[in-house]
Length: 511
Ligand SMILES: [Zn+2]
Image 1 (cartoon, rainbow, N blue to C red):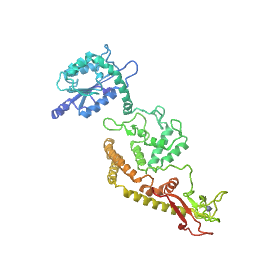
Image 2: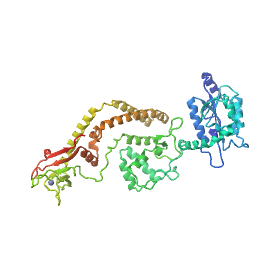
Image 3: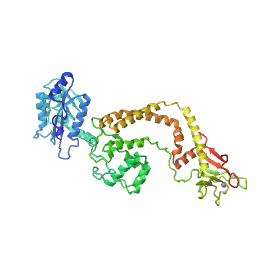
Image 4: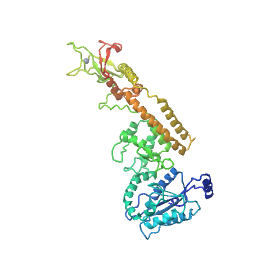
């Protein structure tokens, strides 16, 4: 509480301030008044610390210099018998024209004017002292106000009536208090965060270790899926008692809480100097590690958006290949072929066969898996490329790719310089927001452009390029999105070389 009263830390000396005033006659030296009341019910949530921070933020906006902080704690201004020491001091200093240390007073700040008065007498005395000097400024939640204007004299007379508005102001203050708690670095989460004890401050060692390891693993290339599986296998559960899901783990890894920072709605909470607010809880990793994990997750290709099939197939073309064998009655078999594991002496590990059952199948067609898969993949990729090219041709170019790359590079460069200690945390966090905004803006534009270009199907250039890196399930979805089936005809009895001409894809037509 000490620093919330008196001259703020780092204030230039009276002599220095006088020199500053000589150089800049428009500079205002202001004093701030804060009061926390105790209503007998609950302590005023809007603590003096919050009040002073709000005033400091406003003073910075106006370019005013705060030379003194008056703070009355737990004193109700409405009770006659209560003497508010700092309020009395403020009135005396205003009349004197300077603070005890000798700093001139050119203005007063308060969060609400009801902080200054609850009784008509107080307001009158304050106003009289304030107006002993010309040109003073006054600022509160209603903004800048001219206390020299006539209306303000009678304000004291209606002051009591005005304190009826107190109830409304109290409600407004409690709405602000969630954010203020966050700004002070207090925990605001309703649930116990993974990694911490119920107090949300102390680390829960096993979970904290797991989180630290996960962050480092993801930086090193591990997937969220792997982390999710590891945590579930290790028996960790969420604070709501559930098994971990991909999305939950992702949120935990992205949360700056792990490095001691606080976020609200996905944005870092910053103080008046734009610095991230450091929470009161124990950190698990350094800000640099947290940033690296966010960057690692950001740089990964976005998920394809293709839903996972309920049936997990082991082989690429199971159910996609159909038997093209001509049966004895002259019809085509058309049975869906299945994947079968090869015998150990064969060169390939799987094949596709037309399995004969009571109702269908003929055992008439067999294809070796490796070459069939490779051939169909190549056909599908060529098809996707052709589709993407024809779609791209019909959409005007965006043309901002280079700008986005440059913006991303400057962010990377800024991160690199920070990681290597060339710039300090303060510089880093001051310079980051404009770059991030630029990137966000460009990405939004790009997303709109890509959405246009991608048309209704999930076949764009991106998918073509990354096809090879996709999981089997994703590949199957992509294949099924461009073709109905592949008809496989038999090459005849006995061992024959692989002949791609015996595979006939049936493409879906472009709508
Ligand atoms: Zn068949």
